[in-house]
Figure: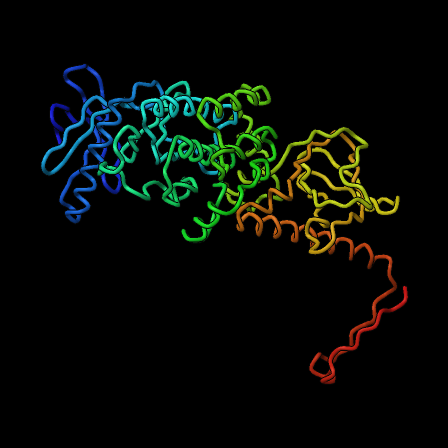
Length: 452
């Protein structure tokens, strides 16, 4: 397409299931705009009518919005075969790009973005508008981390007579982000958007949705009936204060949930002082590159390594400090990044472990006991990657398997080394005869421990 109405097409920006978005020049205003185009008649007549209504709704609703954190709509045109919407062009990125564990934004940026989204949703609600489809893909981020909420096609106009409003469609939205009352088809208010924004925030901070399931039926059941885990269970480095905020945002009881975006935003501002006001991306990248060089993590995929970073804490430990202590009960373990430690049992030195070696892995791997049977004490200033066992248990199955395999490989290597040392203290072995296993009676091998 060279032109769309009066707008000259520059290039295609993206294509979805129902619409294509183009970057265009607006000849009347000397600016670039994003033009979303929907073609009718490609599916059933009923679907075309539904899309037409949704598009008309988006144009009508969006032009009423006047807030710096809501995408501004300049023009909406509905023709016989197609329709288009000319809106503010955002030269930035979608939050969908930062939901993966290896692409997370620094905490302070997430808090700032969600804070502004809270105020934008408040502004929309004062206009009688509920978005109903808040999700990462519908939140663009421009320069200076200015979020722009887009796609009001599914918005609910509270000022209309709901008995006659043909644009009101039950069950709209993206299931993973829908509130319990939206899934049930109950009457909605602003609190449904705040719930969805809470889900988005949870995902941006952890790389995980608060509710996950293998199929949609199970997902719906969990959203309605189960509580979300604490956000720090997935990312232990987060401030504890975020647990209470997200617990309230994701409340199933409407009376206990935030009543408006301003309340949500106020609580977010109260925890910002706990978060470093610096871009932690550079530090994360340094940590990633450090782990990438350690032998322990050689077999780990990049995304798994990022997941390790999110469930662990970096500890700087002085000399002569116990990392784990014999007789204690816990499953904490980790990997020495720099420095070394001495392992001892009942006050007797057993060995030394250095860079890339795990510490505390036996209690973690044991299926039924978390009792410590050895002590590990630092011999020099040591940088220790402490992996949170509880958070690791909530991680992906792929990461759990990778960690267990790496720990077992290390344990087997150490067992072989200890066996060699033990053999060096033993008596000479019995010389093997010329026979073979085939000459052994059917009863099998007869084993007996020889006295040392």
